[in-house]
Image (tube, rainbow, N blue to C red):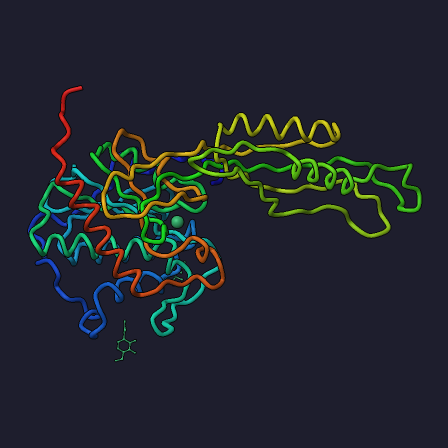
Length: 386
Ligand SMILES: *[C@@H]1O[C@H](CO)[C@@H](O)[C@H](O)[C@H]1NC(C)=O
Ligand SMILES: *[C@@H]1O[C@H](CO)[C@@H](O)[C@H](O)[C@H]1NC(C)=O
Ligand SMILES: [Zn+2]
């Protein structure tokens, strides 16, 4: 949800192709890890979680996926996003244009937590967000290929960098100049189809005071007091809600200021994030600006790029639905495709120091992705005229 900084891909917007040509290895050639007796799904998930791929350092994960997908018979392209950051795009044969796209992100938030199997659970950074989705998406596509349910031109797989920090990976994917009838985004939705996600906007509120000796408060102006009053006003603020997305919520996540107990602080600031359930970022900005200005003109607010709430398709039978309160890459991918958001695990564990997923959920997600892919392919192809 950070403000998006656009950096041109070093391949000047075109793909740095590293396709392996069309005489591919047979599908489902077992790798050494899989020969180990563990399921291909768990082996792939383990390999992914064992690789550190904090936002900005995704290269080992993209290299792994490229090799894995090539070994499993896909044509693989990499797309440079920034120095040493690559998206991975895979498809069957030579049809890089496909009807359905399955996509997720390979970066994780810091810090890295190692892979650990605990009974029927798998712990570790990314085990939920989003390597649980990545692994079950790939295994689902492989299963459909094996069962002759999909063929060349049906499904592409796109794994992007930078979802957790800026969305730059998916923004760059627009330069692939591809379009799809439907795009299935993988994020933890507890195996439900998300009907939408809240928008968001981040901001920093700064208080400018006047330093002085704490024994003479009238000589200075206390920036921490100003900031606290500003934050108290924000807590009282009525933010818009909607039936679809629920309440707009505000979280002050970081606060700093002052130097010592006997000094009147000159500076104080807090950073906060609003999850928007109704209205636009501009409207929320207005409400916050006004509330803060009513407290003191020594308070200023600086906003990051915001996003409005996004509605997502749920027109596939057999799934429960859920509204999620986090941002995704959905808004970063341009096009008039149908969009679905689905994946194993819960966001409540993602980003935590106890991130973990149930093995059963990973397995169920494979079935869920298979259903989403096949039901979208069963629709008649979209008319090509405009
Ligand atoms: C492979 O087998 C070894 C023991 O032979 C075991 O320690 C290891 O965890 C297994 N790998 C996976 C991915 O389960
Ligand atoms: C990527 O892999 C190399 C080789 O195993 C390793 O030295 C490096 O530390 C890894 N990078 C990250 C960010 O973990
Ligand atoms: Zn995620």
